[in-house]
Image (spheres, rainbow, N blue to C red):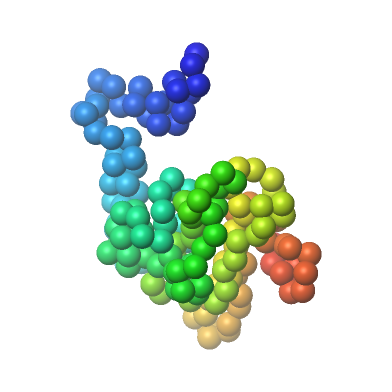
Length: 163
């Protein structure tokens, strides 16, 4: 099988063949599907979405759609829109973390290409303060994958211990 036929995009095109979605672009189908899921849950659920969207996550159409639904790109919020390329061969960020408006991200970061779990994307993390119903403040540490939030310096190791 040729490499062009083994991409996720091509897999989705084959899957959609013969269905009511046959003439739809797989990326549009995904955007529509995930948007529908978020819209159905955003009122009653805290949402954290860590995703590779394969387009510029600072000014692309996916980010605009997420923002229209009340989702926040944590790097736009915390780092004032400054992000490095997130794919090892890329020129701009294509992966990010979105959270629903009712969550409060306090810190977010992207590890250097040589740190964390090795792959074709850089590892990311976000710290979120969650207030429980009894008004006890706790920090929630997230990363994708879980152990990648440790850079070996300072209090970043706390995130690993929290799991």
